[in-house]
Length: 492
View (tube, rainbow, N blue to C red):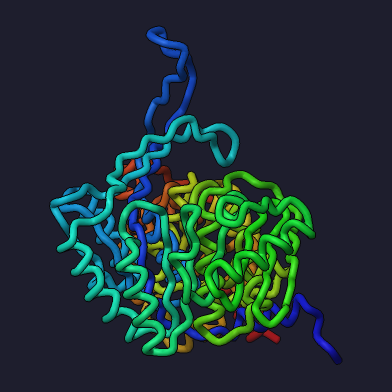
């Protein structure tokens, strides 16, 4: 039986490896200030944003790095930050996400680029009311440029693909671009460029460029408005920079691929609600880089990148996606085990979800022999927030708590069954007898336990309530428990 195109794409994504990408570009800090708008200022006709919290994320090339890392790539990050508190935040976020930051140059000669978006909550996603930028987009001094070139060469030597993420903030000077291209040629590595400016000839020798409509028009003089004009623009791009491939992102119309061997491909965007286009371009570039670095052909890479961008625009802000989240866009092709995380994997995912305004619900248990009481309890818990994390006792702790002969189901089976429930977003196992340490790592907004814990004392209550969260005691299903199931089986 021949597989469908959707099945083939899902298989290609599910079987991707974990290549290393040398990512060179303009690293930024994205700061989000969330609040509520209830009135207009008496001082001027502007809304008053009452701030409730601030979030920090990697921006610019840092956002591409975060996307790559969440998709399973390894990243050698090369760029420039200042010597300020914002630089410290950038490096901390990059390290936490798993990037190798040995290639990042810290200099007192320029400030770290920061973009602060002010978001007024309204509905599930909120509305951006203001953006404040602090940046230095002049060319880097010669000593900084020289340091960058040394780091570029080292990063390229260890990678399967070179990605230049150009935001026109001064990092990708002609000398740095040429150094990256020369290093890639010497190591026979492909070079993917997310370009800026009107002169694409400075990227000559790259493997592929990924401009959007506006950037394509500025570089070629041809606005890609329809199929024919897009085709002309794509062919012009190939000649401008002597490329093997040109990929034009067409916002609501998807993406178009043109290659030196004559291949043409138009990938339409799946219909979905668009809440925020921030980060969609970064997600496209990240998925393309992951796929090409692992050896997939350009057409498959474009289809997967287009699918990833479609998921990204349904979120607020630039939020990294897991492979399983992209796989789910192909109609539920994702494996439930993609929802089973270690505590270290969980951290960046929860930070990203919180940055989008999600309320995190947490509950825990042994969940040995999953039954209807469990599923109803978990569904009610999920309804209290936007995301449900289930802490799962590992096998050794279940034995200590329940006695010899337990658990009946091993940890991996219990985790997979929980992850298969649509109401469960993530499952995280813990080895301790209580979930205290895990609760402090998850930092839930809502902690849920069964009402039978009313007089026992809920572990984590003080921590959650001290942070402004709440504890909810959920009614249990009468007569439905693992103990009852086991006793009934024994009785028969």
